[in-house]
Length: 142
Image 1 (cartoon, rainbow, N blue to C red):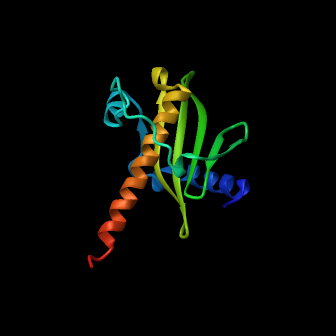
Image 2: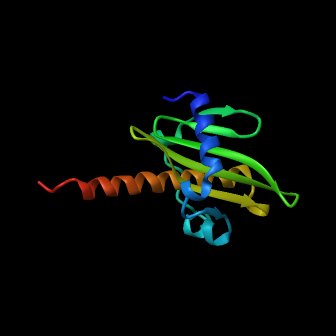
């Protein structure tokens, strides 16, 4: 597992080139986002207890870093035009290095710790599901 110093250095590099690291940009969380992630349903699917949901936590004052063997998530509180917001960058950590996967930002009514963590959980699940599908496609049928 990487050291917190390595993760901080990687965050500095990623944040200085977010447009290249996240070509799809930063998702601005709104009602449509929550709906597409199935977070609005009265009985939204319950959180799964899976290994990639367990993280080490490091609070450096300016950001919170969640990390494990597979993922790194940087949670950065910000303020835009005096409105509090939270920027989250999720990266995959594998043998080839650390690669930004998705970024999202919450503001206003969507900027609560519960909402941020539920969105983070859904994106992690989506990344793992996509990786599983890609591996299946890459594996020749026997």
